[in-house]
Image 1 (cartoon, rainbow, N blue to C red):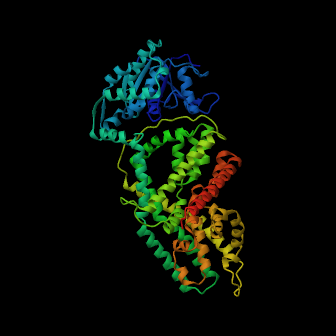
Image 2: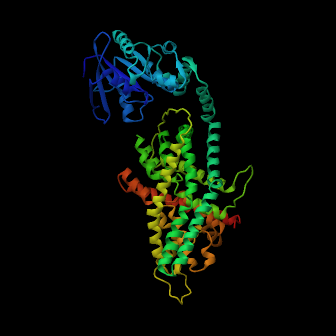
Image 3: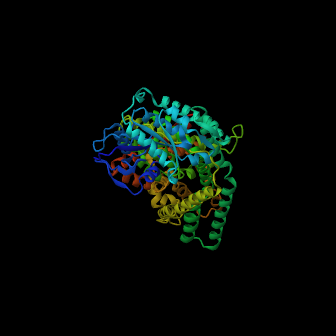
Length: 620
């Protein structure tokens, strides 16, 4: 342990601590780990204005002295003198971001209240000025009761005044009596931080004032939630309203390709493979590309404008009520695209029970693979009419399906946190980015990447699953003089007939039972499977072949069955990729099998309840 005076750099993440540490110490740095944890210890030698050496340690960024991760635990222990390998600092340099002052001052107040000699480095003042914010460091110093030095760490501005301030602190290093933070809760400290930050403002541009005004609505516990629900509602309305023309165009291309193959090839296995397996099977999924791109257009816009983080803030309170950490929001949000990256994103959650709960409910978020399933059933059975005020019934149903997935996930989390993953949940803090106009290039690039991912999936997993299903549906061939249908006579038809014994009580028919098997590879394969089944079932009947998949479903399914199918897919067991990544992230098969089991039970119960309720009230 060094006998030199010890100064600790401490502050929120992204305050510029590391840049300031590098500017103050240069090449005189030592790296290592704190004993017992894989948390980096970064220390260096600092020379004061009078030439005296001081040891400077850069502590991990944290939002409070209530640790939620090993990094934050180390910071708390060092500052409070509880780290065995480190003496308590003789002084603190609290680094705050000038452009995000009210958020950073909350932690600064908590540190100042400890009574250690403290100086505040008001960092990144150049960026604050660029964004139209001018602050008075003297007013801030008076309000905080400690020296405040404006700095620009990356340009080495303000370093000499900071060294001079530190010299005075170390000469008078006796702890001072200050108000204890124990008597001031989070909300009190936050309100005080906002008051001080407001008092220090000399000049502020109208755009910053507008941001604050918008946030008073966007972050309001009632109006903010209504705004979020309104945006989601508009998004799902647009998924149908904007996609009609491009979907019709893709359907026209698929029909032209199917007709060309039919005219060019004689009847037989090869034509059946191309028309029934490839064009009708894969094409029935590709046709929903416009709806997927519209959905992701809204998601990318919300992220680029800075609103998505605010949505996370609003949802944090709701998740805390069901025992989830606010850190779970981003992984769950990622799961709306695909559960695989969502589950991998849970690595940021430090509490193992919190993380496990988030992994187990991630598949309940309505991923983009479900959208083709929802779209084909809604398009076939829900009338394309308004229910008032220009609100489309189809978009409303889609919105309610997404809401049902979210509500289901929260209820499952509530049960899990009180049973198999029992434990305390921890809150988290987040910084609000400024609002900004999205860059069109970034939006276009994001949509292009999503389209490529979807089409690659259609050309690999969906294509392979459809071809395998076509083979199982096409063999053995039904004898020419037999009245049996090819589907009933095939291997796949016989397998589906056995499975339907289990699924028939919830309203499912043989065709649904058959489609659910390849859907384990990828959910949207259920659509291509149904298209392939009905294409083979149609044989050479041109009238049936010209029907869309939606029209064929209307002819064969009663409405309660269609609604039960939608309810099944709200909770449907996830694809093989999700099971594989869950096994990797949980280091075994116990939790993946548990996840598949409980999702099967939920899907079965939801489908059954929907079917029997719809039948009882006379829907047809």
